[in-house]
Length: 86
Image (cartoon, rainbow, N blue to C red; front, side, top):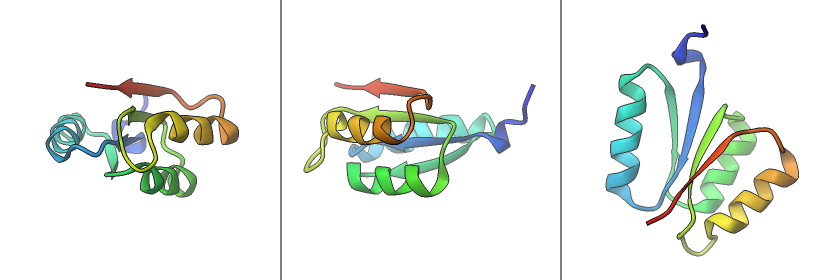
């Protein structure tokens, strides 16, 4: 089993409290957590850090989660993405 600290998870979420809560939960379990408060920052982090998993909010502005997911899929068909939506 791999060491969770070697696994990075990217949270793309514009709601600060949800981002903080999820990030803290994952950090407590030993994962490296990357956080983005909007779609463009999330894409930039995805491109530079290549996380093992992404959680993605669908309702964000100005770039919504559908556009972010489409951009991610153009570059990587295999990275798991968990869609989070209110």
